[in-house]
Image (cartoon, rainbow, N blue to C red; front, side, top):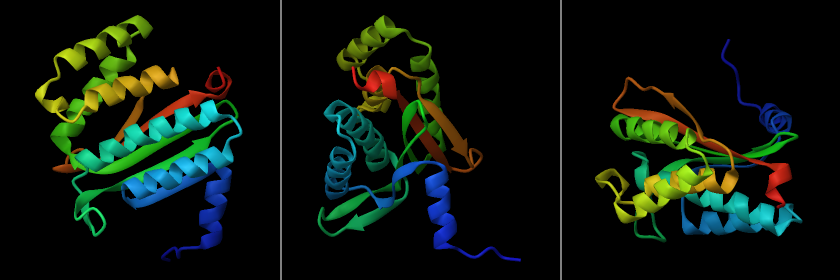
Length: 186
């Protein structure tokens, strides 16, 4: 039997997983402004809101620049990336994640970069960031490497990723980072 969409099931899933924000579609400046406003209203702590918003920006830029799925934006008068951005939480963390279709070869580079970045300590991250600013690689022409490094530095936690349809030319990349609630206020 085919399962039918249910707003109640959708709502229940969001509540169960403590999803406070989710968006699927074109990533635009207007969307980012609304997300920033929502985060400031939701959080009494300005530092938490700024950190979360900074992570949303980094993940949105990944979608904007690298998503193979595009849609035409009348306002921007150009094609923009399509993907999903969500913010959730556990008792200990806020979690910001994104998902979008990308060229499988670029996903391979991003996954390798994430693995490398995740094994660096604070000093190693700082040095790698400086090195990437001075000598960006061809793959980093849009700053992807810097954004990944910056997310780990700001959050204090490793990046996680999941690759679906990796055997296809355009795989789906889910990229997530969490912020410890106890560290988010310091």
